[in-house]
Length: 80
Image (cartoon, rainbow, N blue to C red; front, side, top):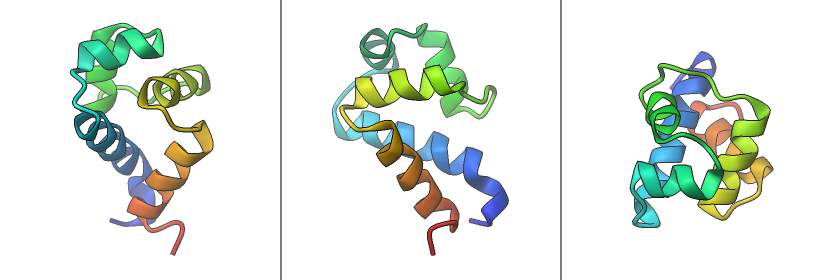
């Protein structure tokens, strides 16, 4: 992935962590305090998450927001 693909990398990371935890989009949304449609839109690259949404997603995925961003950076090539 090129550096410009950080949004795609973030979406892939959210989906990967969610499925690794065995969570549906609806379950993640509930844990994140977000609407389930919004989670789906993030995963499909239809919406870019706000900082508040990133914080909620991290909470629902049981990671720190910085870890979620760092994983996306790594996937996109920024951390290399």
